[in-house]
Length: 232
Image: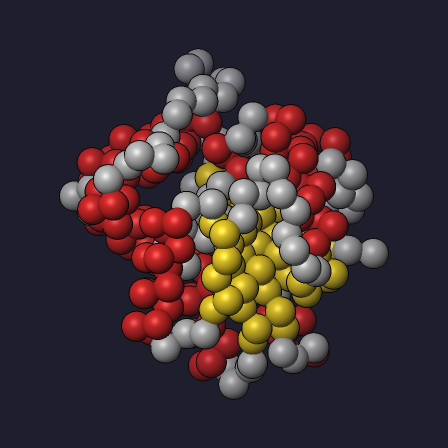
């Protein structure tokens, strides 16, 4: 019953004064969780057709964190011989510096820039706009505003990958967080994230309020939701 409604608590990762060492440890832990959950692979499967038909595909990853998604997309595209133009933004200077090092070490060319997507629109239009594991941080009005801004920035497709709120999801995320990282930030934020996440029906309602006509929302395993919207 406690999961029947969203329960939003401030996450440690969102604290502006979080020590850089703890922030970096959390970003490394989240990278392992993203690898375990197959986030980049799922998103790549939703844009591979465009990458083949319209190279080079220009992709923006919003609230990128440690740049796990763009690096993962780049690796998959490279294996398929497909060129990409990658951009990514985040509000945190600590996250952007960490993402820059990770991308450089991987050999991945990503245009990284600061942006507060809660109050600012992306500075350009992109073929595909991706938002992964960020929407659950926002209340409903802020989430609707974000979806509207991201839809305006997407020439072809908007993809929103986030957690699903449920008892099984909560248990699996809590276990996975403990298995893949020692970061106390991830241990605490992981369960807070699930409790704050939207359900399939709730995300569909947000998409409708944002004017995303024709948007689809479906469950993905483990513990994920995927919203897909095609620009007209």
